[in-house]
Image 1: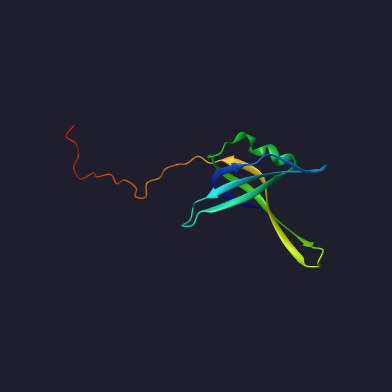
Image 2: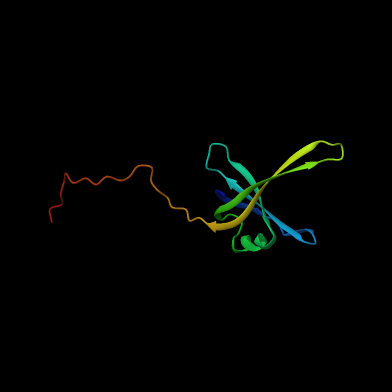
Length: 112
């Protein structure tokens, strides 16, 4: 299990890939480092509606699994595909914390 925190940038519509498989893609902007990352994740099957409670711009934490599979193309070349398969999303409340904590000065007590 993995998690990523960031701002919800895009929420695509649910797409019915086959009669038995539906998916929905979302994009998260992770700007926690010097180089912001735009990450696409996929919600599948009964998880497609999990994102309905959120709106673009919300700060969220996404829980996901990393999945990989091999595919052999018609020319016989083996390709590997990875999917970030999201299964839970929760809102993250931004708490501003000062970089330097305030210090109380007791050297000059008040006269009352």
